[in-house]
Structure formats: structure tokens, C-alpha cells
Amino acid sequence: MTFRPAPSPPASPGQGRDIAAQLRAVESVTDVALGHLGVNDLLNSLLDRIADLMDVDTVAALLLDQKSQQLVAQAARGVEEEVRQGFRLAVGHGFAGQIAATRQPMTLNRVDSTTVANPLLWEKGIRTMLGVPLISGDELVGVLHVGSFSERRFTDDDADLLAHVAARIAAAVQTRQLSIERSAALVLQRSFLPASFPQLPGIAFASRYVPAQVGGVGGDWYDAFALSNGDLWVVVGDVAGHDTHAATVMARLRSIVRAYALDGLDPEEVLAKADREVRQFEPDDMATVLCGVLHPPYDQIRLSLAGHLPPIVASPNAQAVLLDIKPDLPLGVMTDIPRRSVTMPLAPGCVFVAYTDGLIERRARSLDFGFDLLCQSVQPQAPELVCSRAMDDLVGREVPLDDIALLVLRRSLESATQPPTR
Image 1: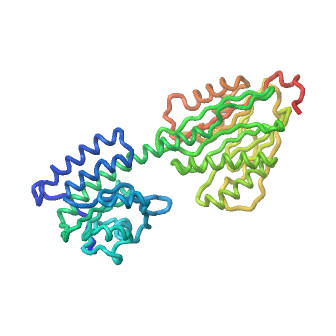
Image 2: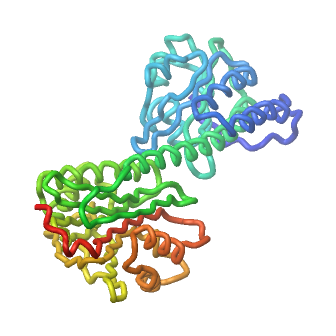
Image 3: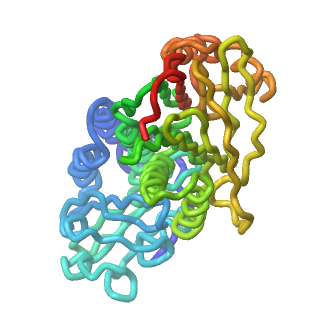
């Protein structure tokens, strides 16, 4: 087993073999494939080309699962079973694991139980191997290795060529992964937004959700649902982070809040239970949540804030105000301090506005300025008008750098004369 220093580009294209000419073949494939292929199809389209370039019997690409810090067999030629059997190993273990840990090329002149972790490799008859890390920028993407059934000695030129190929593949794979993850997160996020709002006497809703245009999709969401007893729940939350994981945690939190609300708990109790689950099962995550419930006839709302920005309320003949509610700590912060709630009146014609920080926070202005701007924007009007004006006044032509979730509830003027529903 031999570690090699990270290879540098060859001094001239004609040294050893015409590396530049051979790389152009791989580059042409990745250029075309980037436009339409997924990660698996991209890798599979390249492995045959690599086998031809390197004159090897086996090629395998293992990609890094960031959360588990394991290498997962993603594509293979000559050792397809590695993929079909779901082979994976921890960084630092076995041939590929050591390449990932050191981020250095490695050659292997004996393939057996003492040098590799996967018995499939020696059982297939592989005699020698060469592997290199897949690195894009400073990020480890995975490991690429090739093997020979004959007693072949891989040279420095071989290592140079495979390293150049790996650099091209790593960039292509990372680009596709980021695109696919963003699309998956966006689909997940949108699937958990309510398809329609509860139809309740004297209550109207409108909403907006806009994903960040850069940096990946985050964990913002809003929800509104009614229970069989007539209780109306409103929830707006924001999971820290911008990736598929944040969107997944968001989906879990939404389900958790709904489940505990169904048990008849108050908002502060719902958030306390949700906090316990986040700390137990998602210990590295944090989320802010606004959680409120309105009981028929919907003339007041009981609110609890887990680190979330306070809502804004606009009443007829009065300027919109930021509710003076002191939030408790976000979900996921280690604390046993009891959570609190406040009950606020909602007069007929009143508009209630909940949102995430992407609506008001900007690097070039203070948070207080954002609050003031939103208060000036909100009027006791139809919810759709409130949403449209808020988005126009606070976002306008800007490219959103953070997710924006906005939920507006209005209690109609006629609700003052409507009989209670319970």
C-alpha cells in the first residue's frame, strides 16, 4: 500500500502518454452530461470511458455521505455488485476510506483482507489498485479507484491521469448534487405547505412562500389548520440551514406540531414537546417557531414564540403595530425553562401577519428598520392585498437571499355580528 503526494499537472502533454488528449474525451462527456444527467447517470456514462483511458478492469466511484461520514458505492464497472449490495464504509477504514481521510492518491499492490475492507474486491480477482480522492474546491466529494486483474504496477503517470479525471468528475458531481438537492428540498418544502386554508366563518387567509435564489433552499414554512372542535391553528417556522436536511427537519416539525395540537395541548405545550423531540432526535439543529390557536368565535389568539419574530397586527382606524411579545428560546437550545404564551384580542376587521426573517432582514439595514417598513406596509385590508403590498414594499425587485414565508389572517368586520360556532 503506497501513498503518493498529490500529483501536479504534467510538464508537457507528450510526457508518458498524451494526457491532455485523453482528458478532452472525458471533458466532452462531462460538459454534455452536466446539462441533463443525474449523478448516477453521469458517473455511469464516465466509468466506461475511464476504463478505456486507464486500460483497467474495474472502476468504482464512492460518494461521501456527509451526515454519516461514510463512503457509499455509487457507480462501478467490473465490480457492479459493490453498488447493488449497497456497500459503504467509514472514512479512515479500508483502501477507499484511507484515501478519503488523507485526501491523497494511493496504490495497492496486494489486494486481500489486510488491505481492503470489501471482500468482493479480492474475490473478484483484483490484484492491484489505484485510487484518488474526489475533491471539488476544499470539499471532499468521494473516492475514485481503478483495479487490474493482472500484476500491474500503476505509475506516477497513471496517478496523474486519474487525479485529473477525478478533479473533473468531482466538480461535475458536486454541481449536479447541489442542483438535485435544491430541487428535492424545494419539492419537499412546497409539498408541506397547505394546499388550501380552512374555511371558517369570518376568517380569511393569504400567504406567500419564496425560496432563496442562492445558497440553497432552507427550512421556512407556514401552516394553518382547523380541528374538529373548531379550533384554528396558525404556525410559521424557520429551521436553521439551507439544504435538504433543513427542509427534512421542517417537514418533521410541521408534523410534530400538528400531532400535539390534535392532542388538545396549548401552544406553549406544543412547542415544549416539539423542543424535546428536536433535542432528542435532531441535536445539531435549531428552529424558530410562532405557534398560535384561535378558539371560536376567533376573537382572540393565544400565542407562543420559540425564538421567532413577533407578529404584526393592524386594526381598523389604527396603525399596524409589532406585538410586544418576548419570545422564548428557539427549539433545539438546551434549556428546561418553561415556555410561555400570551393571549391577544383580534377585533373585527383586524389583520394578523406572521412571517420569517427573510422578509425583513437585509445586510444593509437594521432589523428595526425592517420592522418599521413592514408596519408601514400592513393595512387592515383583504389578506391578498396585504401580502402583495408587503412583498412589493419589502422585496420589490430584489433577489431573495433567504427563504421568505408570509402568512396573513384577517377577521372580517361581519364577524362581530355572526353567532359563535361553538
